[in-house]
Length: 440
Image (cartoon, rainbow, N blue to C red; front, top):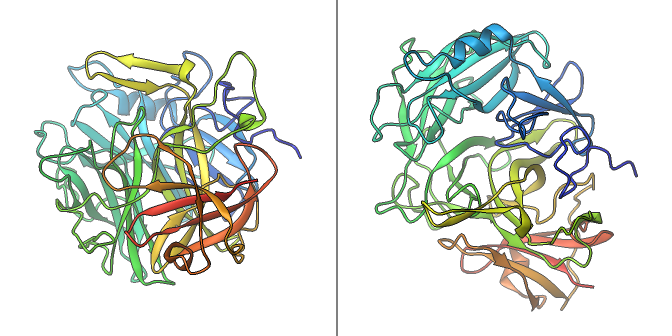
């Protein structure tokens, strides 16, 4: 099998290992070329450890093998969006989302005053080709000059409803996650004032136990009739996570698995956080003293329906848990893991709720199979409020296990050890998502 373009850890080379360096990735299937395009934040390009401004893109024909292409924003758009007036120019653009609409490609991306600032703008840029050049059309949301109680104009995502409405989802932990309506003909807001912020659909709980929410996206699933709000909580350098709530209406309310509102009363059902499956020979292995330390901080991803296969996926970034690549922040007394990668997981629905595959997608059919009776599973439980590393443990599941009744079992590639694995993803009787693999 040709492994070029497939995720390999401990190889910080975006040309030879294209998933490396992808942060806040999105995914688009292009109906004209029949290829997949993933755009990301301005980290991961050649030189200066990935700091090359202009929104890079990765291209694939199968959602498994990718090639890296350079930035796609035009020089004029870069200059315009970097202009912060009296402040220094913005150093990077964040969290792009791209779609094909109205015979053009529309990119929504963020330009912020500085890392951690609540003063930002979401620009819309358009192109005739998914590789650009993308030219700025206008500002969709502007949070410059606002205080930290209001939403940050960052992390855009777009929702199309069955009724033909188009909504921009955006925001971060300052004021929460907001939505505002867009025009289908231009992609710009229905209300032309970029200072109009829209409606809040999720915000942190008082007092906040975790940083967040941020990195939000909404997916409508016609099979269940629900809108699903995905977002992330936690520190992105290590304790990041992926969570979800659902609603019958695009503007909510979005409720968690126990029926609690994500606007101040819940963090949502946790779908992923830092985890550690056992690995005999981690990831088909690199040298140089690299150590397996699990995978850290999955988050800021997008749900993605693939019209080619008719299946759902979730695309997010994740960090290599190698302790040699860890750095300590004495100001906040926490560690961060430096090397990050794009990861694609299959997404399934169990009792009307999405669950993510425990292993990255490697081209398998992901067809459900009957779990073996009484098998010993290497299991990870993703409990609700604790975002520390989740190690695995051995659990024997009986045929009448509540988890097996609310789960999907399928065959996949064993990322940690190579070869084939039998994977399990589901929700246990306590409302916690669980991942498992049959141990050998």
